[in-house]
Image 1 (spheres, helix red, strand yellow):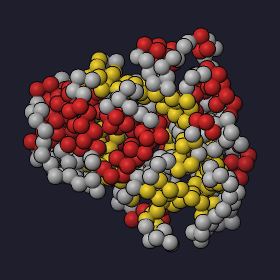
Image 2 (cartoon, rainbow, N blue to C red; image 1 turned 90 degrees about the horizontal axis):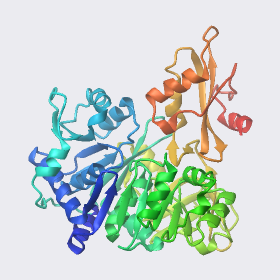
Image 3 (cartoon, helix red, strand yellow; image 1 turned 90 degrees about the vertical axis):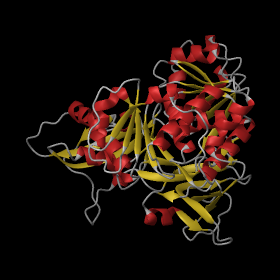
Image 4 (cartoon, rainbow, N blue to C red; image 1 turned 45 degrees about the horizontal axis):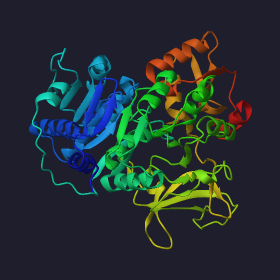
Length: 516
């Protein structure tokens, strides 16, 4: 089974069923199948080769969904880029995985042009919209994406693809400062989708409302899960206007709502939310960061007939575990047990399995485990290692856990200093690199601090040269011009010096203790 088979099989079974709802309208499975075929054939007609990479730089939209399936149908590999990314980040991704094509928003042409200027491997740019308002430059051809979707060849392309072939590269923050490309094969992704839809009990009757960006794999998989089961998915660009989301929940009879703690906090801040009736909402799922126990109880009071699934995962294997809803009042601090077809256990520093109550690193085993990091063999070898007992490759997560006597998992902390804010993984080093570009900053450190809405808020601690009157407002503005929205520090603190180790390295452990 391939990821692109999801849309093909659902189009055969239910061609007239509504597959996707956006602000612009509704599309059936038959329509999305035809549209994605047109995108695939447009790529192939230009000489696109199997295994080439395509970046998709779009908001949640019909074009984003059609684009990724079109790339897969052409035998390619897609990578979703956060729609708030600046030119520097887009340029890095284009060059790092040597993208042959880019599907981007026509409204962000200035960012696109700047990012593509030095993308040596990029040959084709497909812009969302009906007209190209800029001329073709260099050797890169530009095409109007919507014209292709409207009038291209909609026959199913024949490309020999195996389930072990690469399907997706997900860029996730790394401790080095540059994002790492997590390589996922068709088998990895299909296995994850099968397991998640099994425990969520998804069917063709489901209507899933997704407000999370598709560059975040949690958001991406809502589309994949819906198309696998023949369900309907509603794509919203943001949760900025919660009352509109509530109205959509009710009007469209939504049955599934994926959230992160930030969304939960927004919902709970709505004073009149209890007046609404969510009669059709079957489940709410949460991942990215743990929901506070107080928030869980308040959600139960509002969504009285809705199951709440607490989950844990990481990009390198998509999902690890889930807590059955009937256990939520018994073990509200747990992230549950391993999901179907996945094994999870805890080991010490020597790789020996640990028993109940002992803290150690979580190890994951299953077909959903990534192929590796793009172009990073050393980092791959550090995370993917042979299991001592079987020799099979397993994933060392880098996260510390303990397990109770009944086998339920409890998250303790991360071995590295990656921050999770707004459901996104954030590399402090990446932000620090930008801070050091500000004239007058001589030292910078970024840490996460507890936040009831964001999970963790980003705090920058900086030391400046004498004579430079930098302000918090200026630093945050500079960061907003060079980083995605979720990476901009919420707090900036000025200090005369930062704590150091004997070797001169900044001691972030001391900083975290000071700011927590």
